[in-house]
Image 1 (tube, rainbow, N blue to C red):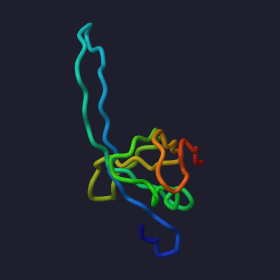
Image 2 (cartoon, rainbow, N blue to C red):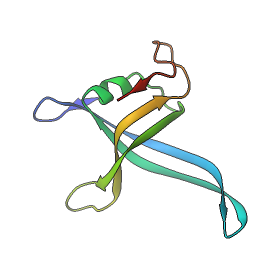
Image 3 (cartoon, rainbow, N blue to C red):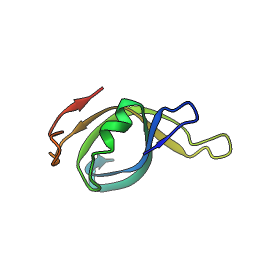
Length: 94
């Protein structure tokens, strides 16, 4: 975790997605990775997460910066689907 110049906690990470979807009547496997960022209390909660842990995340997409229009998910809500050792099992953070 790092901090913004204003002292707000900030955590950058990568979310992976895998699922089976129907496209044009045919089932296909879908996989992708998306850069994500969380600020404030959400960043603090995510600092306890373990790589590979299953989560459900929601938020909004924004450009990475003014030079790169690549999308970054700004996480505003996260649900830990798998438990972790410090007691955040299935706890929803808003």
